[in-house]
Image (cartoon, rainbow, N blue to C red; front, top):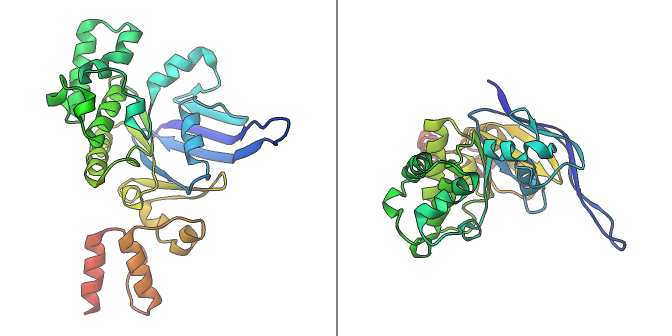
Amino acid sequence: MENIIEIEDLHFSYKGDSETPDVEVLKGIDLTIKKGEFVAVLGHNGSGKSTLAKHINAILLPTKGKVLVDGIDTADEDKLFQLRQKAGMVFQNPDNQIVSSIVEEDVAFALENLGVPYEEMRRRVDESLKAVNMYDYRLHSPSQLSGGQKQRIAIAGVIAMQPECIILDEPTAMLDPQGRKEVMSTIMRMNREQGITIVLITHYMDEAAKCGRVVVMDKGRVVLDDTPRKVFSHVEQVKEIGLDVPQVTELAWELRRAGYDVPDDIITEEECVEAIKKLF
């Protein structure tokens, strides 16, 4: 399958001033993501995961190295508009992305700025709202919506741009459990039914466990990159870098440490229940 994101020897430093030195945040990242993949990126605060996400959308540019999105170099200023149509970004706080007082107007905002004809804009807005199950709220004020609903509106605004890839930077961090569930269900369905490539920055292990691939970052480098089952089987390594594993994975790990014969790659509740039943 064709790559949509290619990152080669990516270094990035935040510039210091006369009194403080530059701070290197990314230290030689090599990473490729194929079209249609659903990839979670994990890492504790300061690991560089959000900085990496902002490079894919050209919010930040490499200090050294290269980032290509569907063959477009993010450093090519002449192709910035084209690049951001390929890769859309959803941030942690939906209130920072909502700019209009009516839901459908907010989703249409970027399309209006691009001069998309009304009939096409109307079609995209309606389809985007239906894709996130928010069509019935199209005439509501965003201020009347829950956090999860607002985040789905922010996602609809990105979908309306028809990107091939969506980068979500901790989109559920400010949501309650129901809101988290709504947003995860939405982006999983987009990936499954529309083939949109998803790059999900998250600190929730249960969200990462539902993805097709997990990339773990530590101190500006990629330290693990595999399926959730294989990544979370490295319980001690994951814990050493300050992260958790899914609760059921940790339970199975503790049972093995206590001498019980259970698999080391459990990541779902159903698998954990079956393993425990076999012990009896």
